[in-house]
Image (cartoon, rainbow, N blue to C red; front, side, top):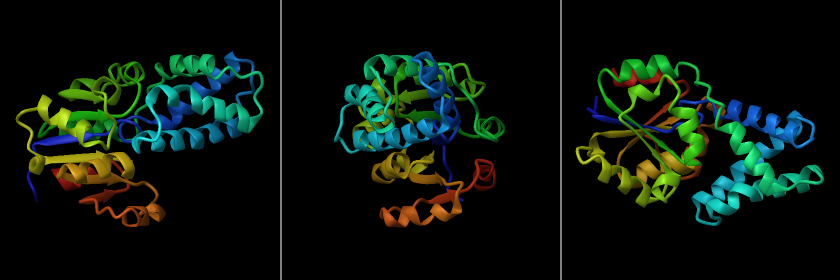
Amino acid sequence: MKKYTYLLFDVDNTLLDFDRSEHDAMADALREHGFPADDDIIAKYALINDAHWEMLEKGEMDRATLVWHRFKVLGEVCGLSPMDPVAFAKSYVKHLTHKSFLMDGALEVCRELAKHYTMVAITNGNAGVQHGRFDPSPLFPLFKDAFISEDIGYNKPAQEYFDHVAAALPDLRTEQALVIGDSLSSDISGGVRWGCDTCWLCPDEQNRGAAQARGLDPTYTISHLRELLDILL
C-alpha cells in the first residue's frame, strides 16, 4: 500500500454532519423570522444552497453575494413574505455557528488514524461558522491545522487553495498526501488537479457513476468512514 504522511479531510458531510446542522439552523432562523419551520422549505433551501456553492466553486458568484442571495431565491420560491434576505442570512449564520454534530464513526476513525498520520482539515465556508462548529468538537485536538477558504481567500477546488495549504505545511509532499471528502466538485476535483491521491466518501452506491461522468477517477471510493481503517492501517 502507498505510504501517506498527511491526510487532508474535508469537514462538512465528511467529519461533521452538515445536513443536520443546516436543517436545525434553518428551522431556528425560520421561527425567529416568523415563518413556519417546514421541512419542505428547508429541503428547497438545501437545493438552492448547493447550487449557489457550485456557482462559487466555478467562479460564477462571489462569497458576499452567496451569503444573502440564496435566501432571496428561497423567499421567492417559497413565497416567504416579507423576507429580508440580508437579515435572514445573519440569523441563519448565527444559529449555524452553534450546530456541531459528528458524522457516524468520525471520532473513532480519526482517533485511530491520528496515531499514524498527520491530519489537517480542508474546508470551504464561513470562517466564523467553521471555527464555531469544528473547534469545540472532540475532533479538533486530533488535527494539526484547519484551512478555511474564507481565511485563505480561495475556495476548493482552486489551485491557489491547495498551494496555500502546501506553503503552510512545508514537509507535505503531494505524493504522500491523501485528500478525503464527499464532494466531487471541490475535494476530489481539487485533489486530482493538485496531484495527490483522493478518497471519495459516497454513502449512496447508486451515485458511484457520478465520478466517471465528471471525468474523475478517485484513488479510493468508500461508503463509510470506517473503511478508511482498512485502507490506511
